[in-house]
Every structure is written in C-alpha cells, then in structure tokens.
Image 1 (cartoon, rainbow over the protein chains, first blue to last red):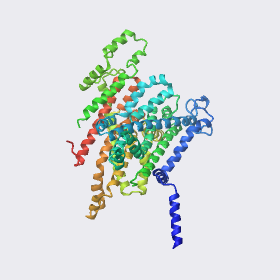
Image 2 (cartoon, chains in turn blue, yellow):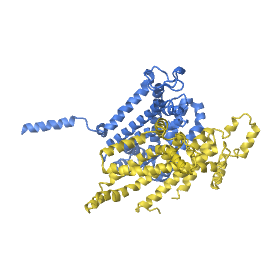
Image 3 (cartoon, rainbow over the protein chains, first blue to last red):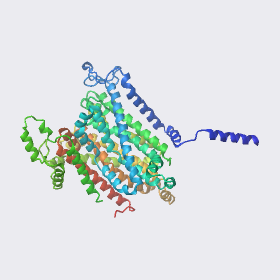
Image 4 (cartoon, rainbow over the protein chains, first blue to last red):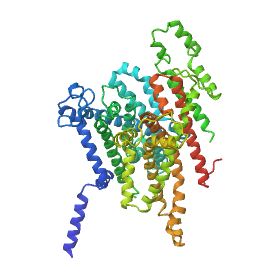
Length: 308
Length: 311
C-alpha cells in the first residue's frame, strides 16, 4: 500500500517537473503530425537555403554571357540549360528565388501590420468600426491587378531614379502589394477583437485601470496571433504569385534582375525551341507556393482550437 | 445596396488621382517625337484640356463618362468606348465560360469529397485543389501551349481574332482555339469552388436537421442533394461572386498569353504604349464589374436565404 503511494507521488512529481505545455509546443506537436505540412516546410527550407547560399557556391555568375552555348538544354554544366544569350538559367533561378521570396515576405509583413492596425482600431473602438469597415469594403472592390499594373508603370521611373533600379522597384512592388492585400487581415483581426473585448480577462484588465493601449497590445492582440499567422502564411504564397505575375507581364523588376516571373517572361518567346527554360522557373514558383499553402493548412489545423 | 454608387465614385477618384499625380506626362509619346515642335505640343495639351488643374479634369472626365463618352485613344485615335465595346464580349465570354465550367465541375467534386471524406477521391480532389491554388495562371497557360499547342498540335496557341462563326468548320475552329484559355481560368475556378463546397458541406453534415431527415427515412442521396447541398451553396454563391477580381486578374494574364483580344490584353498593351485614356477607362470598367458582382452576390444571397432581408 505504502509503496504504491510512493510510486504515485513520484509520478506526480515527474509530471510537475516536466516543462509546462504551452500553446506553441502543443501547436508544434500537432503540426508535426500533418505530413504534407512537414513536407512543405522541408521543401521550403531547402529552397530558401538554396537561394540564400546557392549564388555563392555555384561557380557561374548570373550575367556571364557565352553565345557559343546559347539555348542549350539541361546538362551537367548547366542543370537548367542556358538562355538565348548563353546565360546559365540555374544561376539565374537561384538568384531569382531570393528576390521572389523576399518580396513575398516583406509584402505580407506590410499587409499584416496595416491590417492588424486597422482591424484592431475597428474592433476595439466602436465609433471607428463603421467607417473603417466601409474603407475595407472599398479596398476589396478595387480591381487589384489592373491597379498594380498602372501604379507600377507610372511610378517606376521616379522610384528607380530615387533609390536605384533594384531597391526602388523592390520598395514599390512590396508596398503596392502590401497596401492592396491588408483587407482580409483587417476583417479577421476585427472579428477577433469584437468577441475578445467582451471577455472577462479584458474586463479585469480594465478594472485594474489598464489604459486602452495596454489592453489592446498586451491582452487582446496576442490572442489574435494564431489566425493572423495562418492568414499571413497563405498571404506569402499569394504575394509571390502576384510578384511573378507582374514580372511576367513585363512590369516587375528590370531585365537585369532575374526573378522567377521575369525568367518566364523572357522564356515565352522561345517556347517552341526551349521548353526547359519555361519549365524550371515556373515549376519553382509552383513548388514554393504549394509548400507555403501546405504549411498554412498545417498551421490552421494545429492552431484551430476546434480541431475539426 | 446604394453603397455601390459612392463606392464607384470613390474608386474612379482614386484611379484618376493615381493617374494625375503620376510623374509621367500623358503626352510623353508625343514628347519623345522630336518632330513635334514645342508650340504644337502646347496646343495639343490645351485641346485635350491638360493645362487645367486635375480636380477639374476629373469632374469633366466623370461627367463625360456618364454621357458614355470615354475619350479618344492616344494611339489608335479611335474612341475608347468603341475599343472597349469590341473587346469586352471576348473577355466576358472567356470569364463567363470559365465560371460555368468551375460551377459545373466544382460543385460535384466538392460534394463527393465531403460525403466521402478521407476517401481516395477526397485525397485526389484535395491535392488537385492545392495544385490549382498554387500554380500561377501564366505557367498553366505556357504548359498547355507546350503540350497541346506545340507537342501534340491539337489546338492553335495564338487566338485568331478575325474568325467569324458562319458554318460548322469555323465553329469547330472557334471552340478549338477557346479551349486552352478557358481551361486555364477554369482550373483555378474549379479548385476554389470545390474547396468551398467541401468545407461548407462538412459543416452542415453533422447538424441536427440532417439527422432528422435521415431518421424520417429520407434516402441518403436526397438528404445530401436536397438538404445539405442546398444549404451549403448559399455562402458559396457569395464567395464565388467575390472571387471575381481574382478571375479577372487571371483573365488579363491569360488573354496576354494566348493573345485573346479582350480588355485584359487591351489594358496590358495600352499600359506599355502609355495610352492613358484607354488605361483609365479599362481600370474603371473592371471596377464597375467588380462592384456589380458584389451587388449581384448580395441580391442572390437575400433570394437564397430567406432569413436575410435588406431594409
């Protein structure tokens, strides 16, 4: 009898000594069980690593011209083949991935910041709700791609003159995509704020005299994090698609900056003789966005308390 | 519902302000031509009203637009209204058929996925949907061109705009040349609709009214079709209508790849030519289409769901 009791206490002690399970360790545990999300995470990490480190390891530069090997299919020297000027498509694809992924992440960061700010204001302050939501509806009815196209066309040269060809275009594309993508986040954050601000813990915070800003920042905002994270993940995929669409239409980065969309734009004129040139950059965009979408799906499963 | 008109006015203002505040001279096409002397350029500016401040130009542009006068293209010197009237039917046909295909395929696929959850079919459909979301429209377009246009030579990959349908042969040709642009748009559409239908039906299937229907002895197929599907489709209608800007964006790309003479292709060529009147009008017309689709979704929502009434 005594021994069982001792053993029980020992088990209870071991239990108490183990680090407390937080939401994030639980979520991570749940996430690792989503096979496709884990596969997506591995592929995306691999692609990101390749684009970050690859350009330093790969011996051929993105702008090495060699007309004698122009338009050659994939080989050991040039795994993705060469373009019409004899440049190595593999080197250009590595470099282009860097730009595409950077654009996706930065644009979503802008969209999330803007959307969270507007959503928090609309959800917390009843007076601001109606005007801010009308504004959100208005932005949702903007024809996004046409507006992106004209804004970039019109402001491209000015920004290029001000910040240089690469940084100027980067700032512009990222800002314009971010400014036209914040609406879903704002709606999400607003809905969360509307329900959370009625909860007891918010009432308690108000009762001890916390100012509005502290309640928003310390008490409500952390609780909206998980749906925003899911939406942000999927948003990165969307932003990469938008950037590559702009580049594909010839209104993205200048020709000397090889993004994946730009590679396809250059490739389409040679589609009959150099199908590999179309295939590799397009497949990389597809693979990246697919991985991101699966990660988003896994995060949604892991962070959704309903666990359907 | 009246919110549509102020929305359109604000959108038109935003578009015009972007154009007017842009650092590019709308006459840069003429400006680049050294044969045009300075005083002639000044006279053209005056004739086009470009020397007035932009808020005045905006009001003039808007009032002219209400009368159906969209201005004159800088490039082709023909009326912008005519240019758009020629091309809008092509875009609407491609987008419309892609929508019909999306609904006709997306609903059954989503329904079977939900009813047979975690079956082989569901896994295949889910994978297909994820591919549909993730593959850029221009890549699908180029792949279709490579496979069916170049390797197999089944379909022409440059759309011939001069084709007139007058007999069976030209009809077959018209269908053949439309298949690829439409399937590119339809692919993304089917994926989206199937996903929405699936998740909506999964929310409805465990509800009490479904159990009631089953316990009354209603045949399972009728439970699914008449009870669950009908209720699940209500939010799908709105989501499909709200997805219009995405489809329209896809149409711009698709028209560009296959050279379909629609307003998307007109937009892209006009932007590269600096043809501001055409660009402004096309962007504004796409805004009108988006607002119309939103309005349509609201009305349809009220018709389908009797609990919703707009006062």
